[in-house]
Length: 388
Ligand SMILES: *Cc1c(COP(=O)(O)O)cnc(C)c1O
Image 1 (cartoon, rainbow, N blue to C red):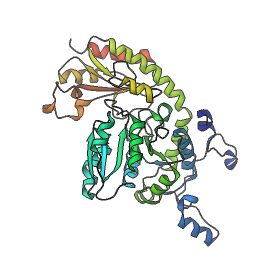
Image 2 (cartoon, protein in one colour; image 1 turned 120 degrees about the horizontal axis):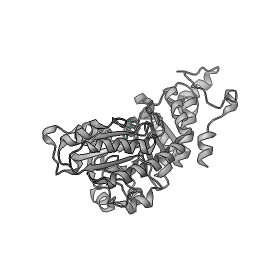
Image 3 (cartoon, rainbow, N blue to C red; image 1 turned 180 degrees about the vertical axis):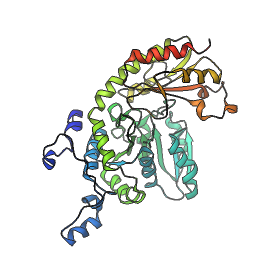
């Protein structure tokens, strides 16, 4: 289906709400019944109709339809945030004694789940460099039931050969989940490449205005029902109607925003690359990116987020740079209207800062919806404060 039809029409059943262009927020907890038999049926399969908003809700359903279609998936569940989507997608598909193979340095809260929560239930994890299919094969053993991918990673943008990993997993009966937050389905379609579950945080590009959180999990109807009947209802981490409404609103302008951000990012990346105080830049669709060829093969675009390293080896210079920015804010997250930076060293104890470890000197930037020249000027004046 055409993306324009998905974002403007699919799921918007306007005849049910007075032909209003914008859908109502069905701010209700429950839905009454006239017949006991109908109630019984709803108890038997809560995914068949509206019973209680911890399960299905009409506003949320509009969003689910659009997001499933964007991913080319049969169905979709929307969670209160991305971390909840990851948690449910994994938990529904593992049991005690299982083994997971994950890319190294996955998103913080996926890693917390692997390192802190799952070991309590006798589930072990092996982290690998996911760039090479051989590493996936070598890490897989008889009790491996799950592969966790994140392509690209949101700090160093490491990517995996998605189709190869998905094909191998299928041959072994292993379930795959890929965090597609960086690309969104506009720039990468994991389900088409054979991945079982495509996950993305809706907090970032879909919301687009830094005013709500959400998390998306797409897959087959069978898989989504399995998760709905257990983890989704049980943890109660489904999205609320108002937040779903904000995400529907965000979706209407997603392609326009992504287009604009892609253009701006190209300008900002070029500016940073040529700056004499900059050592290197990491951006998947830049020729200098180590996995450039693979990125070009499986991603139709990249935007917004990139990482650069200053030539200075002093932590205080990185601090000076970040604190000198007048318009670009220092904050976590990305995907909104506002440009952001975050230095990796903010999360490393000062005494542990090691300039020989390039990662410690990472500065991640997100280019938002401002004019490119406005961002370049801000970077220029902040870089002027960094000693040669
Ligand atoms: C932000 C983020 C998440 C988690 O999403 P939340 O909505 O913040 O819970 C997951 N993966 C990546 C890559 C992210 O950047």
